[in-house]
Each structure stands twice: as structure tokens, then as C-alpha cells.
Length: 309
Ligand code: 8YV
Image 1 (tube, helix red, strand yellow):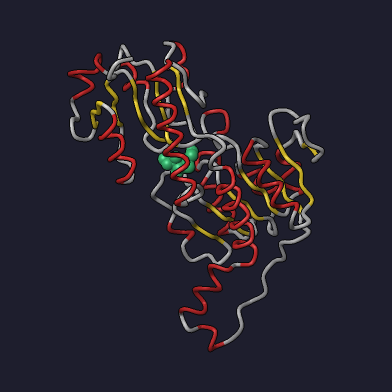
Image 2: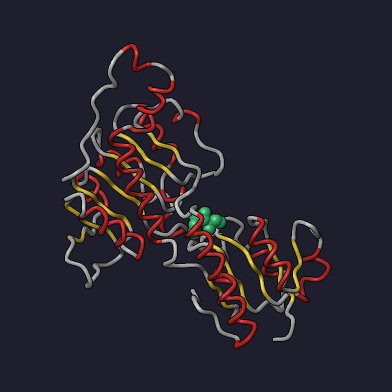
């Protein structure tokens, strides 16, 4: 394909923006908000991210679109069915972020159970001078339930095994490549687990999978950790369960309406709140960027993607 027109849907960090600008015939959507209505038929490739996505409405305005290259592993923000129906191919950035996201999951398990973030606030606010921090909950040797036993879920299990945890998982179907116990019933997994970690994809099929009943099953000593998508959890039910003391704690990297986070959670010592940073390290973000460019170049040169959906 000779010099295709590439539409950049949203702003990326400077290094990524500059490379896109330098190496491709680029149209930046935020600089030309009417471009889809005026020149949508000229766009060959969309570069987007898990955050910005590509909606069905946008797709409809690009009748000659051939490929979508997305930064991120999640694709719940992309109108995948519409794209596939038109033969538009999609790439994401799988695998290169597994380790950092799994590290984040384990970090949240430890931070939430041991309340390290709240301990840090206790020290900074001078409260240690008035007394010791209350006792918290042990991590090693506990029962860890993983919801979504894909590539990231498996990396979480690998790390949890190092903490001598007992591991079970819930998936649509049992995974023949693992000996960990499969639990078909999510509520049963929640009532067994000390820690329930969400590593499933977002989107319609997992919307509010974690509802009031699952949270009740996890119980007053159970901890929920979410590094997948905010939409997987009924956030109002989560806030209500925490306020009522019916859930032991929550470690959250993702929220239903990011970057808005329910203020009711702000003062809870048993809740750890992260601003969606699971993959946000220099090393991993560079690897994700490179994979977007490798996909773009492979598609332009050979009409193939390296990591197609
Ligand atoms: C990023 C993510 O924050 O990969 C994903 O699906 O959610 C994160 O790694 C996201 O890609 C940034 O848009």
C-alpha cells in the first residue's frame, strides 16, 4: 500500500505522537474534528488505543477503512463485530504487557490486604506518633480465585504460586493446559476465595459479572482486585458492600466511569485506588508502542498484521 492515510483517533505520549507524525501520512482527529464527515472515505488505517477505541459510528464514516491498529490489549472500546463484518482487520498489543499487569494485580492484593497505602498515609499524617497502625490480613498461603484465566490470569497465578497460595479459576470453560482447579460457578469461587482477582476482558459478555450476590459470596473477609475493566463490576453494589462492611476490601486499577472514581471510596483504609496504571511502565509502554508500529508497517508492506485479533 503506497502512503496510506492513517487516522490517529486520540493523543498519545509525545514519543509515540512524534513517530506517527514523522513516519506516516497522518490525520489527527482532534485537530480536524470534521475530517470523518468531510474526508472519511480517504482513510485507510486507524491508529487508536484501548482508551479511545473506534465506535460503530466512526467506522460507518470510513467506507474504505482496511485496518485498525490499537495500543492496548483490551478491545471493548472498538466496534469489533462491525469491523469484522466489513473485513477490517484489527491488531492489539497482547503479551508484552502481561508481566506488568500481573505485577499490578499482586501488588494490589498485597497493598489491599496489608493496607500499605493507608499505612503510608498514617505515617505521613504524623499519626504514628499517636499509636500503632491496626492489624491487617496475611497474604501468603491464602486462597486466590482468578476470574479470566487467559494470558494475564496465568501470569497472576505464576506469581501467586510464589506466595504459596492455593489457586482456582473461573473461565467460560476449563483450561486443559493447567492443573489449577476450575470453578464453573462464579459465586462458588467467590465464597471459596480470600482474594478474587479479575483478569477477564471487558465488554458486553462480562458486564457487571461481579454483582451484589458475588460480592456477598466473597464476604466480609474477602478482597476484590480488579485489573481488567471497570465495567466487569457493578460499582454501586461494590460501594454499598464496602460501606456495609460486607466486603473485606477492594484493590482497583479500573473503574466504570474513568477517570471518575466514587468519592465514597476515598477514606476507606481497606480500599486501594490506582489510576489505570496496570501496564504503565517505561519498558512495557515502549514495547506496546513498538508493537503498534510493527503491526502498522506489516500491514502497509504486506497487508498482514503481526498480532491480529
Ligand atoms: C492501557 C489497557 O491503559 O491494554 C489495555 O487494554 O487498558 C492499558 O494497558 C490502555 O491501552 C491505554 O489506552
